[in-house]
Length: 233
Image 1 (cartoon, rainbow, N blue to C red):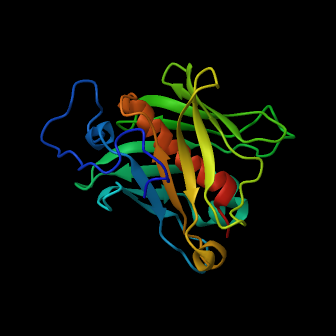
Image 2: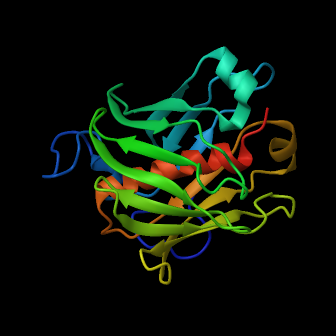
């Protein structure tokens, strides 16, 4: 499901097949060259388990699945702050993206140990990072390439709860932090789901001509945002 308003690029198009891989595109990321995507987390009720996700285009077609890999003790003792590896697989069950989140602090009082995530594609090859920028009020992040240079900025609202029955939008900006080029949205899914399940929907909107590796890093950013602001036991 795309956020409301005219999309910047990629939404509503059919996914590419696996027949040919464009030059410079990691295997399995062909889909991201032409589609936007919605990340939907399955509702898990009861004892805290590994998160599972479907990643779909706006036609509702599943293009990837993602599974968190953590042990029971880590999930239940550390909660949403936990470190994890996330394996993202295509429809042929090939692991095409790996997300690595180390254990870090959260909140404005620890600027020296903020949240971050490494994105690999294929697994073992780093293509970028997501790093939280310190700010006393707003959630801010730097989207970086494999060389650690900032490519884009992401800025969220002061209040990230969905208590007003609406979407929570994180604005994607150019590296100078000024021009708006897209967004990541935590989409309102209804009163029952919001308050009585642990299921969330996210939409990602980005320029059509954005480097496909950076699109994959934005996908990883979506997972980090979920854990930081919307994960609950």
